[in-house]
Structure formats: structure tokens, C-alpha cells
Image (cartoon, rainbow, N blue to C red; front, side):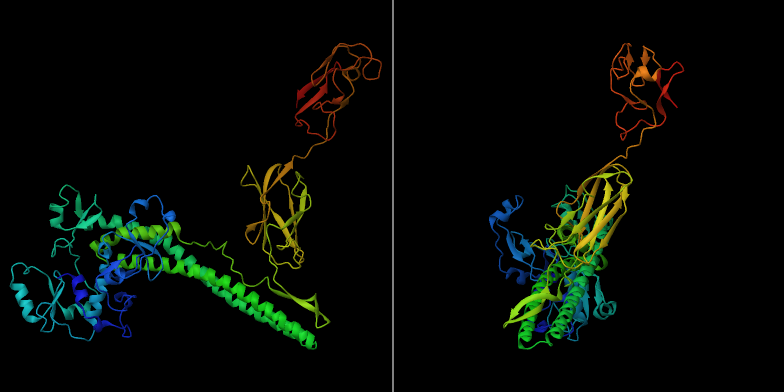
Length: 573
């Protein structure tokens, strides 16, 4: 008799109600009883086979099916009672799911440690004193002796129940569902399944089958890698983010209560009109609190669900690796790896830099603002809940339009709300980053000054010429237009050469003079106004030929000089 059959024949009334101190690992959360034929869903949650079969099918529109799911339209999809994940049952139903052998161990251990006497599973009369670990049955003294005398069961391992109780943990073999009594000691690599000796010589005779202890390290290490390298850090980040949301809820409540006290203190100095105004302000504040609280509740629910998914899978994987035998690990390896990989790829993974729950910092009371009239009396004091609208923020100044090497750039960021009005307060987290687009290691140090009126003054120095990417972010998000492109021009040096009107004058009257450009003049008259024909070109600086004083000059090592005979020539110093 298999372990699954034993759990099915147990009287539910013996285990109903978990008011007793039973291990939650042995209790089905659907029927609230000890597991009967526990099956493992793809989300790594375990339920009784009958409980899974009673779940309502979850229908999805055909348009939501992926191409890989199209051929499997006959598969039934249900919602996991624990995590609400959509899981597909095999065409054979719950019986086609993997058996959770760890849950079977927990059920038997719970039964073993209970104070109720255990009856013999063979005769049903005497009290059990031993257990056959191969047949997975409890035996009285008479049946135990008969079990040892029979040729087919004489070699089975029979342990005393008192000894099993003292261990606190079972060492139960995993038997083949096709060949009862045969333990799953081999692993078929082409089929990716643990098999017994009979399976290896019949169904898998042409396949490569290895002992389970030879392949357990390779398959177990994959699970360990996912848990230790990715899911455990993800679990810590989810816990940290959930804690942030809880702290923000408390801060939001404290902020609302503090603002309410300010409103009440301000309203006590007025008559009935001011009291009416006070009540209206509190009503508005309550609406904001409910609105922000609902947003935090939604974020908390998302984080909590993601945390439950990851935690449940991590705990199962760690328990499987720590408590499961080789065959148990290999039996649940496929579904475990699929679930862990799915969590790594698609789970909600908040990064600490981007998780910024609303702690109510934008809610404030502004007592000096006119609030209109109440019962004919002018009143002041409003509740401000304006938040920054990144699409409405503006940049003022020419610091992002042009720049010159070595000069200091300035611009002003103006934070505005959704109506385009400038915020009347500061305190926003503003980040400005200026990085060279080609030289990634070339960054510019920026200075941001909060003007406490919704504007922020930004200044920085252009270190090197080139194209820069300027990020302007508020609350870790780009404002409209960011990142900006800033082109920094090279600073022009003043010319150090000699300005020549023409080669004739600078060469002392030589008709065949060579200029530093180089150029020649045949001589003659007229040209520069001195009564002779000048150089064909325009007057220029000898160092680079430019006619503009503020322009890019050649490096100082290259200059035009006058030869001993008066001709201009280019020399390298």
C-alpha cells in the first residue's frame, strides 16, 4: 500500500480542525485537514488531490493565450487558493501533478508524534509497534513477524516507531508509481525523470540512466544558484520595500494628524464662519488621506503578494534541498526550477532607488492663503496637496543652450503642478547630472540650490569642450525634455602673430614675396591702398591666416615669420 493510499484512507474526523498544535506543513489550507494524496502545483503550493479537483476552472479569453499555449486549449486553468496564480492542470487532471513527498513525510511524522495510538495497517486490530519503510505501512507485532517471514518482504527495512519518534525526521524511500515496492534509485537523463530498476530495463532500456547520487549535485546546484544568487536578494529587497510602505503609512497618518491640529488651532480664533471653514478643511484633508492611503494599500498589496510568492518558493526550495532525499529533489526538480525561473524573470522586483512611497510630504496647510468667504466672512487658510508634474516643469536661463570651455553655466529649474502653476514650496529631491557623451568618465560637478519657492538654481563649470548629456530629474524621474544636449565650444585664443595688409609691405617691397599662407604676388601697383598691387588674398594674421582676432589660432609651435630677406615663411618652433 502506497503512502498516498494511506493518507486517502485516513478518517478526516481524526484530523479535522487545526486547533490542535499540528505542523502547518502537514495540513492542507483548503480542507484544513492532514494532506490526503498531496499534489504540488506549478506555483510550488501543495494541496490534497481532491481539493485541487474541486477548484473552479478559471477561463481566459483566447486572445490572451500565447502561441505556445494555443495547442493546449484542453488544459484546465485554476487559481491557486494561496497565491491566486493562474496554474494549468495537466490533461490527466490532479493525478498528473507531481506528488509532494515532503508533505507525505510531514503527515506521517505528525501522525507518529500524536498521542493517539496507531492501528496496524494490515490487520487493523493490534496497535502498531513497527513500520516497514519499503511498503510504508505500520505493523503490529504479529504482522511484523509475518512480514519478516515472507520471502518477498523479508529483506525490507522495518524500524520501531519509538526509534522513528526519537529521530524527529523520517528517512522514507520514494517508490515507483508503476512498480510498487521498487525504489526510485536511477535518473533517466533523456526523459529527465527518476526511475526504478524495472523501469530502466523496460520503458527506458535504450536511455542513459545514472544513479541518483551521481546527478543530484548538478541538478541541486541549479536550484541553489537561483535561490542564493537571485531570489534570496530579491526576498530581502521585497521585505525592505514592504517595510518602507509600512513606515510611510505611519508617516502619512502622523502628517495628516499634525496638519489637522494646525487647522484646528487656526480655526479656534474665529467665530461660527471660521468653525465651518475648519470643518471643510478637515473634510478635504480626510479625502486626501483616504486617497493617498488607498494608493499605499495598493502598492503594499502588490509588494506583499510578490513577497509571499518569492518567500513561499524560496522556503519550499530550501526545505526541498535541506530535507529531501535525492529522489525527492529530482522528483520535484522540474516544477521547482520552472517556478523559481518564472519568479526571477517576471516577479515584481522593486529597486531601492525607485521605490518612493507617498509619505504625505506634499500635504501642507497654508494659513496665509485667501480661502474666499464662508457665511459672508472672508477666511484664510487652505490645504495644499500640489505635487510636481514632470511634464509641466520648465527650465529658465541659457545654461543648457550654449556654453564655452572654462566658463560657468547657470539655469533655473521651476517645478510646477498639473495646472502649470509654480509650487510655492521647496524640498523636492532634484538631481542634475552632466556627463560628456563621448568621454563617459568625464563628468561635471553640479551645485543645486533650493530657493524654497518651487525653483532650484543649478550651476556648473564647463571643464572640456564637446557634447554633454544633461540629466535633470525630480524624485528620480526625468523632467520634460531631459536629458538635454549641451554643446560646449572650445575657448578661442587671441592671435600672437603679426597682422599683414599685404606681402609687399611686410616684405619690404619685394615683388616676388611668399606669404605664410603661402601665397605670392607678382608685384605691380594698387591693391592695399599703398599704391601697389597687393597679395591676392585678404589681409590676415601671420600665424594662421585668419582675418578675425577672436578665432581659433594654430598651436603656438607653428608660426609665420619674416625671413632675413623680408619674405614671410612658415616655421615650426
